[in-house]
Length: 347
Length: 277
Image 1 (tube, rainbow over the protein chains, first blue to last red):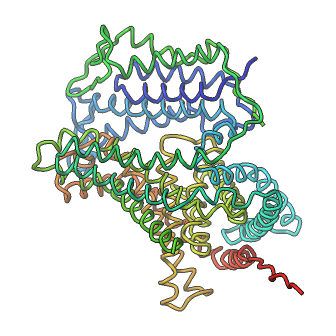
Image 2 (image 1 turned 90 degrees about the vertical axis):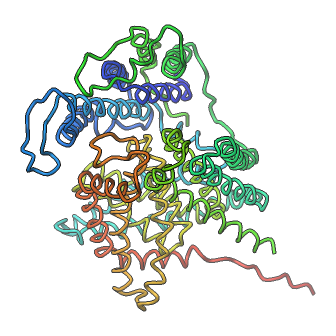
Image 3 (image 1 turned 180 degrees about the vertical axis):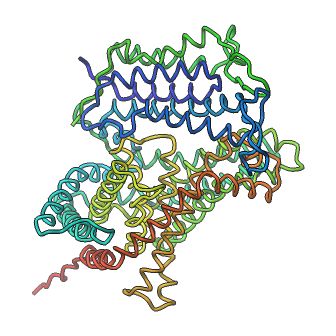
């Protein structure tokens, strides 16, 4: 089976996040969550990707319960009273309403959908695929991330060895201070390895590779951009100068982004194995595109009011636009295209 | 001359981006007051959080760019990579075996490395720890940039303990550890309070606890205080106490090790000038 292009997954994630954030209608949110659950449940972890510590199902159950309870206990608004708590009890005293429960559940649905979408991404893409999207302007930090990710298994292994060695000597973990004989050798060993690594990197000519990337011209541009940003924001928000504020904000953002771009141009990037696009990516991108268009664009024939449902003041059945419902099914694109196997490590 | 100009510009970048970042985090308190009495204010109330989020992202990028200027040295890159890996393992263990409330062992190394190796190093240590640990624990999400920025500030601000330690003449002794413990404990609460602020304007709920455009500063502060006490204080209490306990228990030996390696990492070889006969 072809491995999916990592950009397909990232665009799929964007569409899922946009859909989950753009609606307050519980029917659409349930549909979004179902699609995400099915994709999350059918995906096989990629490369060194680990299964999530909290599954999206467990997370959804806990968060929806907590959100509904919290909102019901603290918001005493709505007409359908379930129970009345004595007013003498601070904060929770008052009417517990069905509207408040549903509102809390809707909040929980949104959070669960966001969590499920990111869980799918974490499962589908190996860590190294994500590192390649660190902008080239931040190449030293990308190297640090790469080193750290490579050293995590080594550090875990060393921790296990130290624990076994200390256990053989009769060391037992009874209190906080008992962790010290485990932590200090781990720290010292790690710092020794850092020294060796630094020497190996210097020997291979890594040192000061992009010294010129950081010059006075870039710094001046950064300072000018950073100064323009708050000035534009103040003009726009505090003094009501909408146009001038926007122009200053754009100029500031443009200067900062220009510095990122100029530094990026000086950093060459080589790829050991190039990812290829396939028709499967096309299916996923088409599904994600439909979701983005329906949720972001003003399309004729689609009633956008159905996206902004509120249960207050009296509970009503949420409206349901079939076209929006169909568009949400676009999130199941990875299933349709058979991209259930996450990416293998690109080495 | 060029070096002096670069240093001035560097200070300006640090100052501006930190000020914008702090301003963006505090915006929910200030904006409603600023928008009172001017007709356009309410119209922009809805897009303000979005603009501020983009602004925080740009400032964080600019600050990272400036800070990483130091990291082209292989020794700093290797040291940072290995320490970030170690801290990420601590976070991995924390996620696998959750401690009470908001307790997290990662702030201990961020504060201590920032204190010993400097604010720049601490900034990168904070930001990279959150990034790498999110990658290895599969917790990449929309909260990550805010966590990175806030944790980076923890490391960046750690050298602020140095004047207090010097004033109390406590370097190398228990006074130094106590100052760092109090600093870490304080950040336990501030970190939680800051992480709430970014999403607080978007949260919904009772009017006594939630952000609303056009409300006076004192009322906004009062609402946030109620919200924080109800939703986060208990959680953050464990983080604060945990940070204090970790620094008190492990602080002195860890500082000794970090200082020893600081000397070893800090060496520079100056070859003698060639002697021509």
